[in-house]
Image (cartoon, rainbow, N blue to C red; front, side):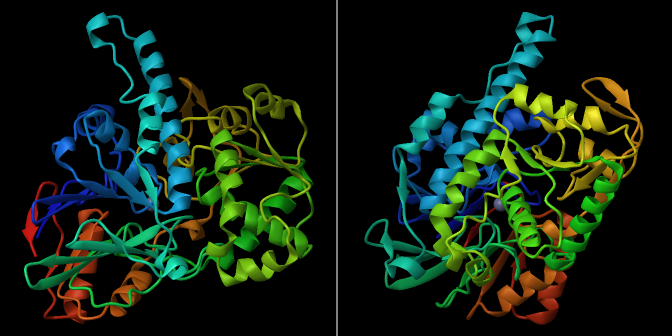
Length: 468
Ligand SMILES: [Zn+2]
């Protein structure tokens, strides 16, 4: 069989891997490339293969950089099934609809400020395109719940292991017959951490894995344990109570927001923090959080112990309000502190977080709590690095609020987690490192070559193919 690496190669977005065997074309992930506008347009509007020739897609999880170009695939003629877990199907729909809305707003804004009609842009895809994708979803639960394989044809079958990265995330394990030979291949998608607030650690694959394609986002470093975040929340809340200030928490609507609600709920139950008003100001986060209680069976033992047996929802707290409309969101500005506002986007690149930052960043009574990785050139990174003044909606603001970073919240395996996961893979013969940048991948490749001198380790480039 041939593996074609067509996205997230020496890069962390646009995940796409095409497996070709016995005339069958199987696509693993169909992710959106996130980066500079012109490059993102070029890579997302046209896929690097003929959509009509793809027989099936298996989707690892619902993050946009893994599912976000499915609407283009379907629009351009794909007719097969898209296999994913039930939670992934539900969440991916909201993630793609949100992306369509952002593209629409983006095009409106861009066209309004462009004088030449020839430069006008259109959204990459629309809400209608997303709704057509949903018709292709075929949901398959984790093997641990069903005990069933899924056959794509007489030669190919697969099962999902739990990847522990976000709700519904799966490791795809494939068994492929070529003549008399049976080949095995696993794709980790994105791999979760050994310990996370809600989800279990990534499940180990029971079978031999000849070829492993693994993510390697943090191949070069280790995270702090997530329990350390408790102290930071306690400290920030004590400060804003004293100051009557506001805590602004830019957070991703999927994963990070639910982790934070869970931790705050637990701290409140243990009476470790006082009940200040908490606002979740992101309609996407509300939609996604509503999906979570349906999948309690997929949460970890701590979660079951803390909330499962009490029949209490971990995601609703008395002092927590989900903000729906823009008017409600704006009205928070006139309400006095203390309060916490958790809002998208996680890197402060758009969304409601911008007006909360604009209104609060110049007040030293307030705290901005950064909870995730801030990519270069984003507003979030500038705030994190204290590069004052910052520009918001074209106007300059001095950073006078306190800025604190919680490094503990990554949903990705770190170097130790990755090494330990690979150590549990049986009879591995070939390793491919994807969803990573070259410096991180190089450090991890050297580590792997030292640990397993006979194992070939590759860091593919975009467009490269390998026979395995
Ligand atoms: Zn992911």
